Image (tube, rainbow, N blue to C red; front, side, top):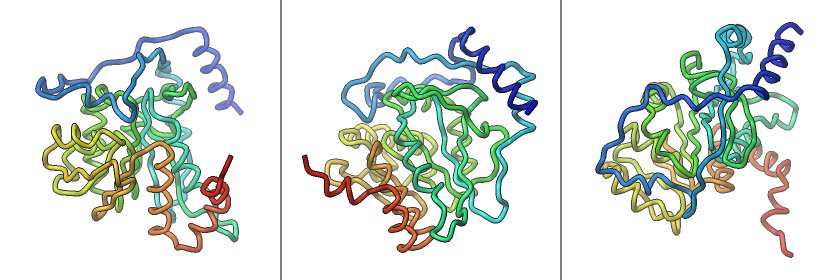
Amino acid sequence: MKFLNILFATFILFSCTSQNKTKNNLTNIDSSMNLDSLASCSPNTKNSQNTSFSLDESSKNSLAQHLKSLNPDLPIIGLLMYDDVLTTELTAPMDVFTKQSEDGKQLFNVITIAERYEVITSEEGLKMFPDYILENAPKLDILIVPSAYDMSLQVKNRNLVEFIKKQNQNTDYTVSNCAGATLIGESGIADGKKIVTWIGGGKELQKNYPNLKVQNDGKISYMEDGKFLSSNGNLASYISSLELLEKLSSKEHRKFVESYLYLDRLQNWKK
């Protein structure tokens, strides 16, 4: 109860005090890179009006002592998050991997990870708070990298890039959705591997990261090459999540989860 009171007081503080986004630990992006290519997943981008709110040190310490509990016998799936992330690219894997088995058993630990303990505002305006931060995140079995319409800040953020490189040493699977592929490209972990990005973004991704084998995003929604899985993003994020779910469990469990999602209704929907 004491911890809940701390959180409540913190969020009251958020409503009264806004902070400018922290821009520490960013390096200058290569001047040869076309920043327009990072305005991804959509041909049109907006100037973000989102504001992040940082916690004071006391609140951070309190949160660090009350980390989301993990079942040590289950795989850990980590979802990266940052301001302006596309909501669906977080909710799709959470939707899929948090479903219990047909007999009511938890199958995975699913956690969110951000650079700092702060409120994250999605592209669509959803306010979220991470379970872990980069410095205290556990070793992941699966890392999922979502995207924002504008990935320029993420690609320049060496903390994020180094985190992806480090976690990739542990993961059984590393997944990118939409323009999350730019962070995979920046990290260099998938050089020589096939990858797909947002529809219309493949040519620039190939130009900026020539060591990737970028696939035709106009025809391919989902790609896998070894441990690297990728999708176009948005609702296509469900494809990569469901494909990975089947790999980690079974076809039967995938069908069970799809039934929970009413996927058949969406597929067969007619006006």
